[in-house]
Image 1 (tube, rainbow, N blue to C red):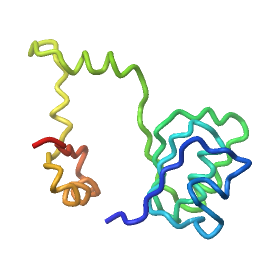
Image 2: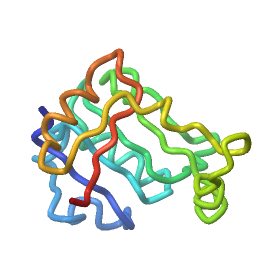
Image 3: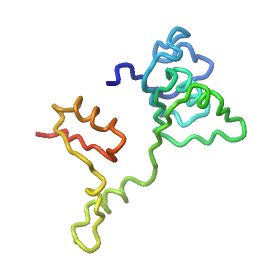
Length: 140
């Protein structure tokens, strides 16, 4: 089970050690780090906070360009998980279509659904290689 998680937002590279209380002692400490900065500096900081063989979740598009250094990702064997971006309003409209012939059948991608009170079990289930998607229902 994941115990150490940190989220990086709005990284000011001049204050790298002060971001959300992170310091040099926090380098390579976290099992999962979520980077939502959209900047190469934020992505580098997030990678440096991730323990070897940890998971880096990229929740924004980062156009790193030619200066991107992949070495830390390879050396520390980081697992990088991305999230596609796009217009959420259009996605919600497509998901709301009820016509059987025109609707998107996204339920076929959900392996298992859990209520919020079983979130820990849901996370354990999602970690299995054969599981594509786990859904957690946050309402009663």
